[in-house]
Amino acid sequence: MKVWVLMENTSLSPDFCSEHGLSLWIESGNCRLLFDTGQSEKFARNAGQLGVDLAEADLAVLSHGHYDHGGGLKKFLEENEKAPVYLSCHAFEKHFSGRERDIGLDPALQACGRLVYVREKKELGGGMVLYPSGGFRPVYPVDASGLTTFRDGRWMKEDFRHELYLLIREGGRRILFSGCSHAGILNIMEWLRPDILVGGFHLKHLDPDGAGKAVLEQMAEKLKTYDTVYYTCHCTGTAQYAYLKEKMGDRLHYLAAGEHLTL
Image: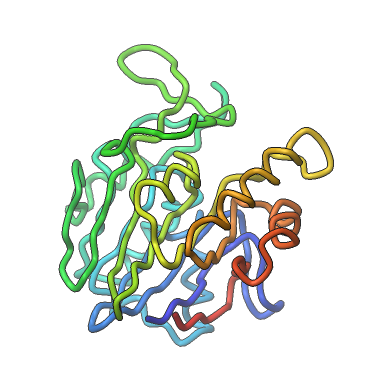
């Protein structure tokens, strides 16, 4: 399997754009797919720099309904005229940071005619499976980190039922892609127990020099109990990654825009 990082908060060199967001190009077997689109058209610029032709994608997946993972979807639909786009049936619900900042997807995208809404576990063929967060019961508490949703006429703490995880079975291994792991990286590990995990851990709100240190230390120790290699990025946070890296060593790696990974 080959993975190109088309967008991330940081970049490998000044040749590549960066922004708060995530986009990955994945080639597994005969399938080429786009996993998330960043928050703007910049992921497409990086694709060109890396020799990735977005028009060749067989399918696309949006991991959840936040702008920094689906903001570039319009650009992808312009570049690619055939690929279906898989996303949660809850992706276009109202998603906010607090009650003021809308962090959801552009509702106009719903009219594109190529969206495939996922309500339950979905086999995509070629060893690929999509799992909705709502199909599992949390083992650990879910920290909404101030994120909210407006549903059924009232505000409520976000439950991240719009989050999807892509599991690819290849070469006897289970490789999992998770955009932000909003439902909790430890919950996701308990649910799916991959051999390799690629994605954000959403730990940027935990201060490794303050109150978040104990939580990060406990998380590092728990993550090490799984027979898994982790490639993280985006919402994990660079300071938080550095702290975890000290504890986890070669079990944990960071991905930046412009990187090419062979798994």
